[in-house]
Amino acid sequence: MQQLQKSLPLPRKNPIEAIKTNIQGAINIIESSIVNNVKKVVALSTDKACNPINLYGATKLASDKLFVSSNFSENKNKTAFSVVRYGNVMGSRGSIIPFFLNQKSKNSLPITDPDMTRFMISLDDGVELVWKAIYQSLGGEIYVKKIPSMKIVDIAKTISPKSRIKIIGIRPGEKIHEQMISKDDSYTTYEFKDFFKIIPHDEFLSKRIKKRMIQDGKKVKKGFSYSSENNNDWMTREYLRKWIKLNL
Image (tube, rainbow, N blue to C red; front, side):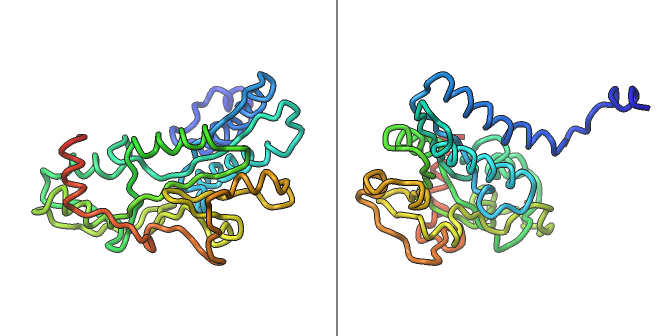
């Protein structure tokens, strides 16, 4: 029986793979970077790491915590680890825009919830945030880009105005709104011109390092959260239409 179990293939959607990739993979990168005297490492996170509701999100949160806390462990070579966090890149594989474009010839477009909103970030904006973290980070920061939101219904109507909207219900592990910064993060979050920065707690930072981290930043209010539904910046249908024409 033991031999038979070894020979059986794992299911295609194996939850263990998320742990191997996001947690063990993070550990491999952290250890290799320290051993090889890498100066800075910037890890790519996702909105799913903020208040996760499924295993994938939990592994991404664990990954973020590993990279941040590695700045304050036995990191003798002082490799600086930081994180950038954003949602699906517009037009990327698996994002909603290519899906709707492929479905626009049909009479209806499926929407899980009419109130659902998503953050909208371009590839250029995502890359810009990574470069900012590479140049600015001191170790332990989580960078969150300020980006516009849009209702999924408006995205669908922009891509295919004549298609009927079919509400199919929310899927397992799916959120109605995306969240980048939780209320619990508000105690250590600072706002800058075009991004937010979540910094480590004071017990991990010297006054000198903290002063450099928050320079030109403003502390957000207690209880602040950065979610796609309470955003101050909203993408218009006209802008999205022009972006699709230029990029897809």
